[in-house]
Length: 145
Image (tube, rainbow, N blue to C red):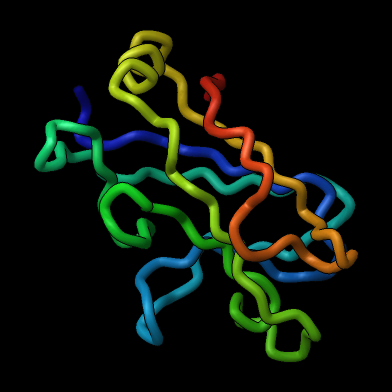
């Protein structure tokens, strides 16, 4: 098995004119990478995360983009003020779980030279940018590069 995998997050139909970006690091010591301003198109974030074997021989994830405890890892998408857009009314984070990624899924991805992708609604129930933990979460699917 490889040391890392490539993931792609697709934010569908996000609010126009809002900055979004991947959070690298945690707490107050983080930076926003792949910062983008939303338009009328879907947004894509493609990135690698490290793989390692946990204590129970299960797949675990690591690296500066990975947040949370073992068994509950996730990726943050920073939005508005959290993404550095200080003049925006929104200050949110979108928490994308790294659940459902098994060794079998990773092996299949490697055979097809692909990546894992998830589709996330860009807008929340309140009409603003989607935030908090993605619900419902349809998981990660094999996709072409």
